[in-house]
Image (cartoon, rainbow, N blue to C red; front, top):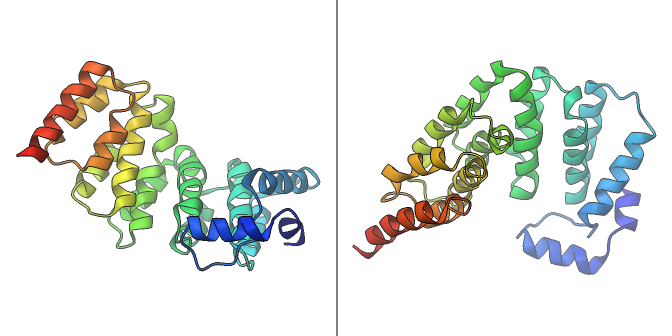
Length: 235
């Protein structure tokens, strides 16, 4: 905590608190500085095992400032290959107490996403998350499939699409944004797949979702889909 506080500033702390609309305590430490602190500590302890990583992350999570939690997320993401299925409940606990995309997104995409790729039995956990009452958990179900789809691996696109269909009419901004984000990243390697999924939904999809989703589509596909979306809005 002392290192995090020393690397921060009151001005930045106030700015971050305002930006994230949070009542948490902030040290005002920039993310690169937090990463450097975590990396330096991790290099001084090269023999960390998975359980020790999660113990440290849990201790950081209980720290007095937002940046302590963020340091815990960075540690988990950095050492994610040391984690196993037994650590998924702790990740879920962190997600449920995050309260902000600034913690949720890396926990979901980098940490839980890595676990799901290596331990497919955890897909059942994502199925449960996708129907959870907490929209941060539903967002996490979507983002846990982001990294392989970004790489071009379509193995779980149908699963993502099922989640997205179930959430398509949700008014929650962070759900709509997440659907569009995953589609946007998928489109970088598979634009036709994304365009085909969007086509029958362009009249019901939200603006934030479609604007994100079409960013990497070829101009003709993008313009056609946006025209359908705008025609619905005009009508």
